[in-house]
Length: 52
Ligand SMILES: [Zn+2]
Image (cartoon, rainbow, N blue to C red; front, side):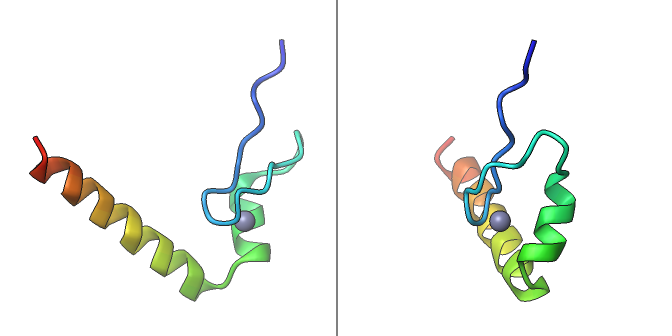
């Protein structure tokens, strides 16, 4: 059985089977990008709560 490829939530690159998403995030993206992404994610969760 093969698991579906993990996709980077920021650039949507598919990870290689032996590549960890965390390693990709740290290598390919700056801390600023990561911070902005997590801020967007937090906002999305807030929006979800409001629509409930
Ligand atoms: Zn990426």
